[in-house]
Length: 177
Image (cartoon, rainbow, N blue to C red; front, side, top):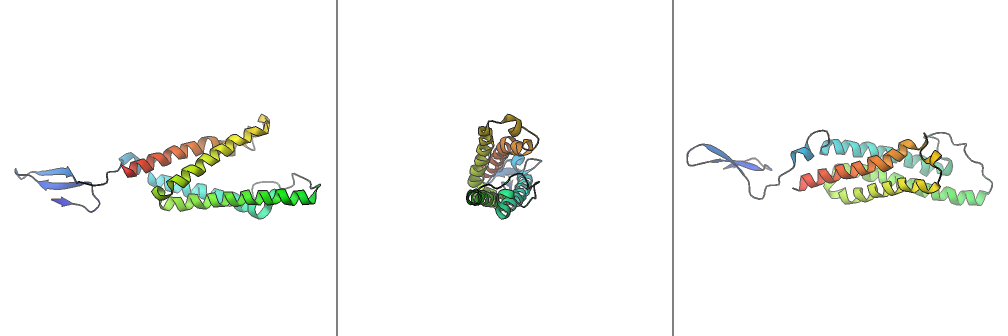
């Protein structure tokens, strides 16, 4: 019997001298669709790194710039401070959320190195992103929520996050078969 290390099948010589390919007992079978093609593991890793870089970029902009941000995503002159103490409290909250975004970006990049190990944390973050997208509607201003400035982020939160969740599930389930 000859089997490649990590292989799923072995070449066995039968009594008729014709080789026969048989599954190796205990071999880890993987879904070809989960491992190859456009929606495979490699593509998922690339997507996770790219989304992680976006999260880090946004996180740094907000963490280091607070409510006004550093301006990496647009104009910073959209408000006037009338209560300095309350502004500093709200600014601190915003910096906290920037740190959360920064951490989420780092998790996406780290997860790309070992998807099965981090998939549960990734799924939780993707659900949180989806919930955050839904929370935008509590503003009760559809013209703003569905307007040109928020349509991109909303699409990421309500469309891309669930698709990524499904893609992640498909890849992880394919590697565990």
